[in-house]
Image (cartoon, rainbow, N blue to C red; front, side, top):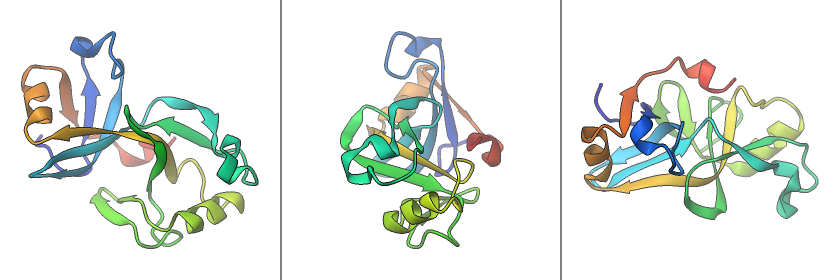
Length: 151
């Protein structure tokens, strides 16, 4: 399987004792400048409503997206009918979009953890870095059944 938007990376034992130990990453953007992805299997230590800006929201899980930029939230979802302006990344998944629409849909329970993951931070690689890590055996490129990712 080749690197492209919407594929998954599974860390190998070469990444044990690093921030990526036991990580599964969704590649959300892959191009000539590098790659951007999110660790999808590591819950963050706070919920959405525990962040000051969203203290009036319901409790909703956040995920540790990666080691870069913990000052911003990012999200991937499967509901372009509820969240406009997202960028299709393949396999029925969308990166970002109108976050206020997403929060409103979360608060009225029409957007659930099975449809959206919100990340604190992201994982990023410059041109050639991720390919080199795959070649050295740090990552396995895989496909996954998309709905299972959001369970």
